[in-house]
Image (cartoon, rainbow, N blue to C red):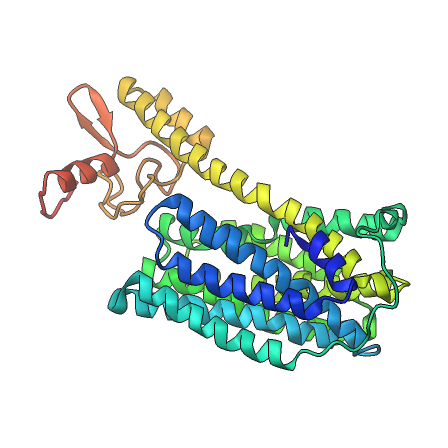
Length: 388
């Protein structure tokens, strides 16, 4: 969406079909080139740049054109249109997950490309421009930022998108690393999120036509933040699935309602594409860096975990318990299933469930965690039953 400021102006200039054709070509071409990628920079070029620019070309005209067809139920119309991307978020991962083991990565990626080609062909053949611009316009409407409602809304979406997709990106990793479920089931958590988002982009939008879109997006955004925090307390599969479904529902409105709000904030409908594009660029500015920061935080946590373990090995005394307790570690990094020697319960790694002390094994003069012993045996090819 970072190219929204450019594509929005092109949309207002009347080049809707050109944007659709260019975007469709880039999405399909990038998907096909991704199937041929053999190195990391090729993946970045194909998926991040080519497909990313293509999606940016498609997004603005896909939602902005609805404002020329609807006036009274525009939120519902935009919600139905926006729900298509969530439906794709359910279908595409499952298709790839099922096909990749049987036909391989290249052809599984190409199948997704052909599915996208089919859907985009329908969009290009049915989309019609209702109004034609009567004069040339400014490339950017920077004066819009002098309007407090528009400027504050752009700032709000910027802050909201900083945390919106964190759950989408890391819920699978959280479920696997916290030993909540296996990799196969964790994969479907993303589909659960997107399935909830399908309804979350339609039902709140339907209500927003009666209550007002801004009055609907505020409680939905608040509930999304609360559910993200509730995920920290979920350590079994059932509550994680429920939270994912609810988070997908409430966060869906944060994607489908902003275009409707921007329509209400724009007096001159001829500038709707430009204003939407500038707002979407602001959203992307909040989305892009925070995902990198989250990845650095997870890497930092892993490095800190290793550092504390190294410190424990050097100093096997009661002070180590204080270090682990105050850093908040409850399980070992890989959450091994081997039982601890004190409590006999599995998956407790370093700090026991009762939180009273460090669980591990004394080997010589060092203090080594259960996790390390399991990894050492695995590396040596030893497969035996352990009862510590």
